[in-house]
Length: 619
Image (cartoon, rainbow, N blue to C red; front, side):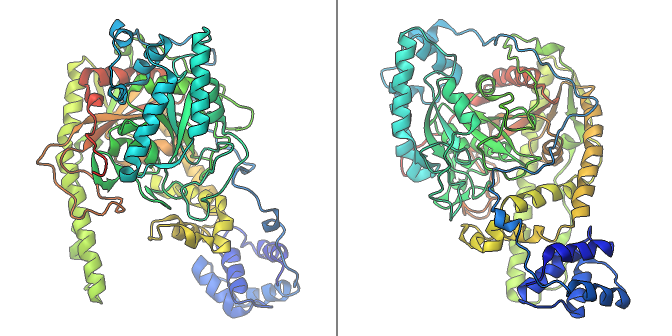
């Protein structure tokens, strides 16, 4: 075997270390089990890397490279676990970033007397109650934590066969926590609004004593001997963990080793992902709240599909210790709930430095339900609201199909594009109505645009980091165990990422820095920016680390266009009659208090969050 370390050193001496060539050439030699690298290998690698190498240089390389015959596995032999982050730390903070560091007492909304005076005989009537409502009932001991826990556990068992949102029920742990919560509250030791409330964790959060499967084939029995920081903090708040909920394999989509997690509003659709289970279970009234994660849409997308209220906090606000790493510079943990204030109450319990996740800033979150949102400066992405569905004539540019299979594939792709355009055109009226409602509320909406940058090209960082996070999976061939193996799924993405040059990763990071500065200037003039949930803003703000609140914005009517196929595993199968739409509010870095206050005002003015799916077991 050749010595990779000296091989790379030789390439570096030739000025080639920052190109694709070293990795590609080494991979060729390894694949062929070669004792020596040949000129032909260099030619092939140089062609892939788009690097011109003169024959004289090739011979010089060969003379050096083939002096080394020892194997190089030093780093691979370390067997670096997923929990170890790179020495480089991403920070979204720019020279424009300012945040509060002093913590003040939280100010929740006042609880109407009716919340504590009336308790339904059938406890399931509380299944869709908000955290704020349930908190008041538990605090006043009108409802016990044990009773709530048993009610939600029973609903999880009843609807999981249809919705497939649970990986593991944590029944023993939950019952012990609920019993403890009731005892503490009876003794006057009330911990706060989450005390005694059942919740669900996306199964990328480690929970001691239970499997942490990451939703992926090959990891079904994985045990991590610790509790994630977020789990610890919710334990400290007195919350009751009832279930570990599904995620698409390794945080991609809604397809996991147990099937496809479903949308409670239309069970022929997946719940989107990757926080598939948290959104589905919350929307179906099977937990009081849940914790999801987002790298590039994984809270936003399922919250939209399932009609939940989701909060993607600023990057570096909630510690990720004990959570599966996908992208160290983009991963974020946040709540998926039924109301905006619920998100605020959960965030208050989980944010702040833990001494382990070095990306977390010393920013304070001060929830004030009485904050005067009318004083906030509000912009809206004018061109995003006005943009009509893209109507490109892709078919006219296509070359004739070589085979019937190719023709069939192109026809299906055309149908997908047409369905997406029809849905986008239909949904425009919901966005228009949202702007009209905001103006009716007295909001002065100022048009604003996001700076123009090649944002999609910056996603190279996510691709490269995710491939590094699961490098052993790819090299061992165990990626074949993942349920979904389509071109856009992780196995293919991880393999492709091995061809990303180190220099291009750094260049993407530099471009990202320029974009961060430019977007920070935009937010210097606004406290909140209103945006359609889909579109370029999703990529932009995940790259810059800005927070977002995604909330229900009405149900589609009976005339809504349907998707051509009823395949729940088809990620684009969305929309149709009776399904939720959403709206997004974007905020300043660590400006969650203002952002949530504004979003809550809109939510209470519209009431769309009060609509719930009508489920029957086996539906």
